[in-house]
Amino acid sequence: MLVDVHCHLQDEAFSQDLEKVIQRAKDAGVSAVITSTQSFSEIEEALRITTKYPNYVYLTVGCSPILFDRAEIERIQRFIRGNRDKVVGIGEVGLDYYWEKNRRELQVELFKEWIALAKEVNLPIIVHSRSAGKYAIELLLSSPPPKVVLHAFDGKVGWAKIGEEAGFKFSIPTSIALSRQRLKLVSMLRIDSMLLETDSPVLSPLRGERNEPCNLKYALEKVSEIKKLSHREAEKIITETTLNFFI
Ligand SMILES: [Zn+2]
Image 1 (cartoon, rainbow, N blue to C red):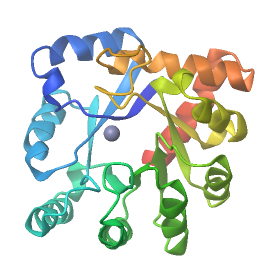
Image 2 (image 1 turned 120 degrees about the vertical axis):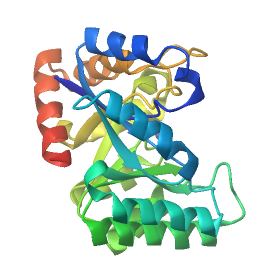
Image 3 (image 1 turned 45 degrees about the vertical axis):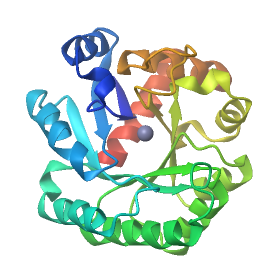
Image 4 (image 1 turned 135 degrees about the vertical axis):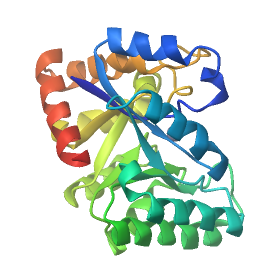
């Protein structure tokens, strides 16, 4: 039983063949998929998908770290407060110092709001951090929400270890084999700190191709190999961690 804990099924890349994408995921042994939003406009389509595939596609609602429109941010926050039963987490939210190098202070302020909301509504938080690993971990530690997963973490392993000590989880993406930093991350983190994700349609294990939840096995294979476990053993531990995290 495998869960893709982070992807974007409402993305346009899936608008033509989502039915087949879901079937391929099921055929590949993926038991559930969590789709994440990054803007208010995405929520409607994401909800349509979760309703169409009940008990298979779950939803987390978030906001891109480089979306600064105050009115839109408030609409998203209101949605989460009013629809607590329709979402399994807040995210993705976080810091992106790669795409937005200038407005760092504003990003920090907004991320603090999302952390506060995760605590208020008692939901897991799915954190995006790009070129900002240290800052994201520091902020989370300063006021820890109940449950934290760092998705596709690109920061230093030393910071990841500090997060791990605080109980944060790390979702390992399908593109793991393409990045030395991620291979190192997996070798240094404990297996029971890991979840798996595809981040579909991006982070494909095959460069240049659209990613899909059915590719989740690439992440499992690599994690098993690095941790010197059979696929079955690794899958068992990761599934247990995933269920404990989201339930
Ligand atoms: Zn994502």
